[in-house]
Amino acid sequence: MVQAARSGRQNIAEGSQASAVSKKTEIKLVGVARASLEELLIDYEDFLRQRSLPLWEKSSQKAQEIRAFCYKTDTTYSTYQTYLKNPESAANALICLIHQANYLLDKQLESLKKAFVEEGGFTENLFKARLQRRNSE
Image (cartoon, rainbow, N blue to C red; front, side, top):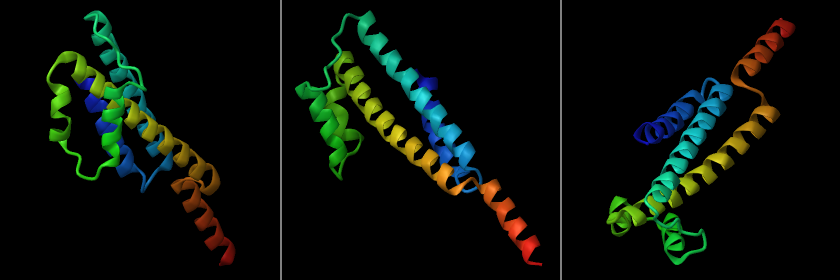
């Protein structure tokens, strides 16, 4: 679980860094991050199931409370402290956060793919610029 979490975080960071040079690499790394978080999500669901603990429904009051934190500007680690006091609450809170992160990564991937199709990649655009320069000489 630790490795899946770290992989998700690291691939988001690496994808962001790669964006200046390779949109294709950025898309790939964001996709890997998304897959890592999906793996982590399944691990938390397994954690609950193996301990016969309930998985909160998306519409439950507790899940709604966790989901609402993303709309606040002063959210910090301490904001979530009350939800990390027992295994059921902690796992469910993290599941909510992973769902939110996955939603955002899905939106980012959609946007990156659209931009890549419409604008081309870095290497492709360099090649076009080189051809234009050759043709203008």
